[in-house]
Image (cartoon, rainbow, N blue to C red; front, side, top):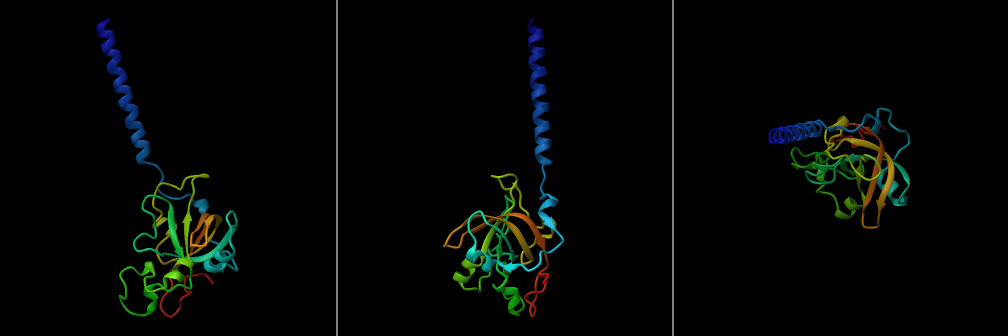
Length: 189
């Protein structure tokens, strides 16, 4: 009887251990890229800039706007969530000022007026269902890079008069980066 009890205990422990290993393997192979359904290669036409849309948007509105990825020093992409900061195209990032190596982090728009910057930023979330952002960084995903143009289509999650403008993306078009002398290059216009 004692031998049977020991055997059952050992088998149970081995079974639990194998189950834990299976869960660990599943966790380590979890998706780290957004579904293709978030992205389009067809740029929407007649799109307004972020600042224009932000002026009249309300919580729950469906919005579409042109912006550029960036707005925060080294944190335009959230490291553990599928979120990014975007900036209005009228804001000038440092690499567009015509001076070689003007700034090591041009995506932070450090030379812009703080009030204009506050009015011209938005947080974009890619949601896995209604309440959770995907649990991984989207930097580099589907061509998303700092300073590239994007057209965002989505729903306003939150907005206030202090600059907060959070949009849950439904579709994103990814363009290219502009360059000195042609600030709209890469915007697809």
